[in-house]
Image (cartoon, rainbow, N blue to C red; front, side, top):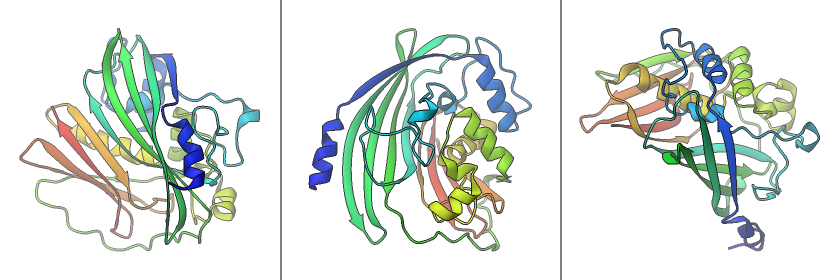
Length: 283
């Protein structure tokens, strides 16, 4: 353990609890953003999987935002000094659906903090555990991996290439990640991270050649592919980001049902390379 990681380790076990009402308005806004014109949502309807990300949002005052648009660190999250932040992946279990129109609570705990050095420089990893409860019952258990990194070389945009053929029986959907979609998702999640809407900042400060598609947006879209095609609800979901996606070209979602009740999922960039992998487990 490095001296710096040892200092951050003081945050392991840090907790916070947040109450929120699972109101209808964010659900209707999410359905519009995700082009879901078929589902009928009213009070009493179950919340689709991953849509709990539209609640329990951080509400830092404007004066408490960092240069990148994220809330300043050092309260619940450790005060890691590396400037660039990424949502790298998560693992979830859906035990019982959250219901629209009822209050709920989220309990959060810092599970681990570690630091590594590699070819791309220094990286710090924070694992956060979440429990979502409604009517006193545990509904969702989640672990998120947040990664912080130091500034690096510019990240080139992928070149257009032919996408690989779809496997037999695969589901697919093409997504056009234009700035309108990215803005609406940032609004849904109250996400001020400037890489999703501020092109000058994104290119000049973080070294990307286009606006970056939110990792959670890609994950939600992969889960939506499951929700729209599977004949059973999801009991589990896990994803990991592999490479950034940008607003410069469409990308493809692919789902391949397995015989064991799991769905293999990936998001493919315009160069045909995998930008995110995921697995959904059906109930």
